[in-house]
Length: 161
Image (cartoon, rainbow, N blue to C red; front, side, top):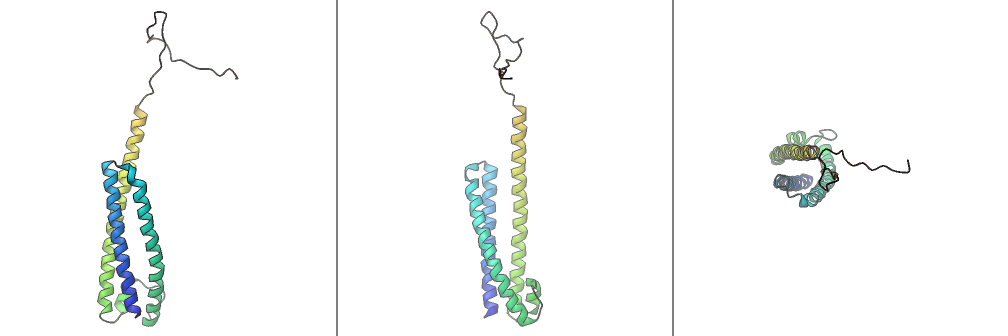
């Protein structure tokens, strides 16, 4: 029973990580296409999935401890260590879960890094654009009613000084 429960939790974790990967790809699409209107919504959806993963992680840790005690592999074993100690067919199933989880986490890290670089690049480009833009001068007018290009910028003084 405990073996099945842990396996079910691992399947659920894979589903959530896959959903998180999908959301990260959606976020990347929004960043690349400039559709920033939806970024806050996707950020909220990602946070919901992360909350579900945190809750699942607590349940998985508890189930892992029960099996670790039964198998005598010590406290807080890795999934790989648990797979090595588990009887057939659970050893193969846990090893496959381990491999799949590693692939998903690696993909997520790569996508998160890419998204971070895209956002930082966009912010840098915005900053550069803002620095290159000069505020238009109001200019002043001479006695003829035309703008006086030689004149200096108008200055307002605070009379309270």
